[in-house]
Length: 357
Image (cartoon, rainbow, N blue to C red; front, side, top):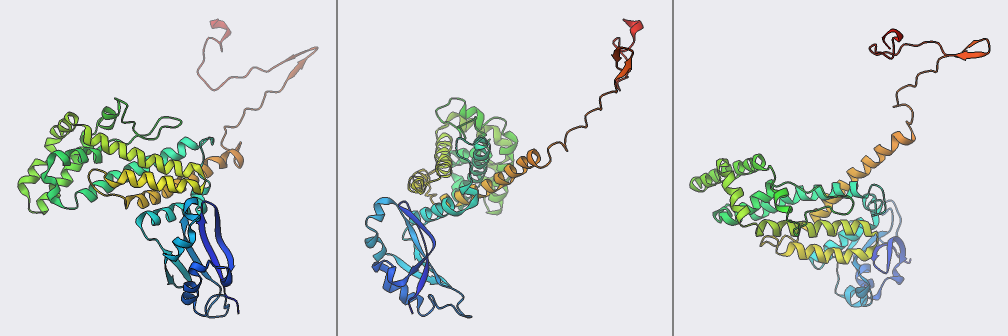
């Protein structure tokens, strides 16, 4: 019996998502290995095996598609239940697969507004703010995984101010992040953050006490928050570099979502990896996949809001408006029509009493 598979393979030059493929039509570079992993299961529909196996292959751009046989020969395949999957050889390959799947199949991404949509700014502003808040949490967690990092107070201060700093809510219609070339960026990011910075310093002080570093903990007491702000203002470059890398990553996510094409996957992965490779001296490239997950949550939330905002206009129009007053009846007096005198529900004025006019 000829074995059959369902092929899931996204490429710039085409896409297969659940496409039925006979074993004899598989690429010769992987055919034998796929059949070995499938055993007798593929295409054998029975009570124990309800359907064909799913074959998932990695995303390829156009250049890679021209040498796909070479790439598939070097691809490691593994089976998990009814799925045979190509194992991503690198972190970058895994990121591209993830981005391509979201862009092609996830409803929040396939229905995300492009720049011509009237909800474009509101939707991607929500994504930008969510990513800024997430990065302000993730980056300090990675950088300060070792409490000894707090010994370098000059480096620590900039990151703590970044953690406590204000997020950028953008400017309609196309600006979603801070512009490090704008002289107002630094004042805006540090505007009225004393209370937030005190909260960050309090948490650092408590952690250092718990780590057995009481002398260092006193250096991070909340009472010194003005000194921390002053130090960062005097040497703003590390904070500005953080804001710049943050902007590059967020704009890459937005470009991916608004392109609506698998050709945007490769540029996104390249830009995201470049922004995160040496962010604040750390290799933060694993955060790119987390950024996509956070953006997906924000897009789902924005989609719900779009649906809710459109419902009253279509289904409940007229029910939320105040009732109109009924027009008073017309009284005919001979050849002339007149309206009866009515008193509005408000205080008297000169316009209500003829004797006062």
